[in-house]
Image (cartoon, rainbow, N blue to C red; front, side, top):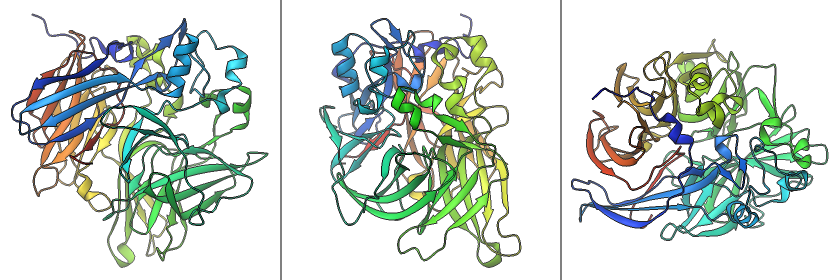
Length: 498
């Protein structure tokens, strides 16, 4: 039997998967961990004769894996997220009101589009966290969605309590957030981020960083006035005493949103270089510092941020997945382009992993030197590290690759890169499309443990649950699943009681 092409069946990542599964259990001998792995995805790309045009707009779907190492079993559940957006759309029989990245085909009626700012806007399938015992689903919206990990029932939006610990600014309206809260090194309390625009003109903004200490409780740690733009910060770097904000060369003009313009139409590129802002946190004892990145870089996901060296040799190291093109306007998230081999092979955003070394002292203070971390000619994103090394020097990261064969965009793989030793290890199969891996530690050494992955088989049209040895990337367990899992976002591991 002939070996299928590396990207055969890639289109299935962007095809409806309407089947649901109510907790089916499978034998899984050799499991080393017990807990719940939750990985969201997009499961439906149309409704009632209207097609989504951007993958980030499709209806979200839960995929939950309950791992029991004592019994050697995995129980699997797949359900659509019962959000206000999904339920209102289902009731209307077509795509309902809400802020989208790009408009549907055919477009929704103007009256529906004009409700974008007041609609539920809760299609929060990007990421999840646990805060004070409450599980929360997130996007880059300021809205946070409470849900039950056990039943996957959506409980509604979380509203932060009014508190003197987070003084609200008159005339400022929260419009954006970050889907990637990150704890300070040595802490379990996540730091969140909020972007507010000044009303009524919406021409200036303010970035607030806060400690998210409870489901509805936050404490302000820092604020940054931004007079020349409304930034978009999907993720950011966290140090012990400061955060690193990569201000991309774009601004989000919220005014057209009042008239139904989708998010892609609000993003305006700026003719400036990227700026790194090192913003001190309350009690940090440092001063605000800005650095010219030396080029125009657009950011998706931060790998790690840490301080290195002393005295005149002191630096900040910022590793992230970046592009010289705006990925939020690229074919990488355009459904029609991703379903067409010719268009996706010619397009993409050339995302790659890059290291920025920022000199913060000595005669070369302010200098920023960058270097490529991932393999040349490949696209890399959805990075992971051993979380025990967050905020300090790491050697190992894992990432999902596209163009892994150097040619076809849909040729996907997972790379393990040891940046200290310059060694790359790869997992790849023909016509196989992996999710972002989630790392589970099982030893004292950095990167010793297992990776949890879902893999879509492009020839069979089915997905499987896969565990890989995190060092060798050799499979240690594979369990076929009764459904196809399309394009996934960020999986999170919840240990028993987590």
